[in-house]
Image (cartoon, rainbow, N blue to C red; front, top):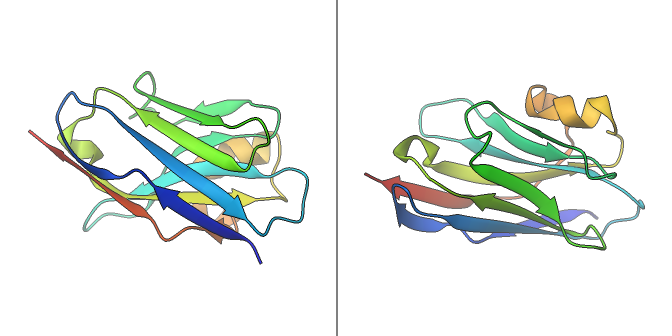
Length: 129
């Protein structure tokens, strides 16, 4: 059974950096679309970044130029490097994956959240001003 386990969240001051990690366990497909999503208190979950199995990436406008999504060589660990953090980045960050999404459907998953099937339990990021 597929499991996604996030780590690396914490508290940081505005302008600081954090790196989130997510490890995929129990995978049975050779490739997965993977992504990061977040949910702030009182707000809907939103897409942050997605990465296709060929390394193509897509970012939400709110994080473009500040966050970088990447994977390890065997593509079972996902990272999110977050720089120049702002208080509005405060949220629970979730890792997600789906073997059925690829190409455009993978990259669009940050806008079509219901399309992605497997989710981690989240890691909290708090940015203070």
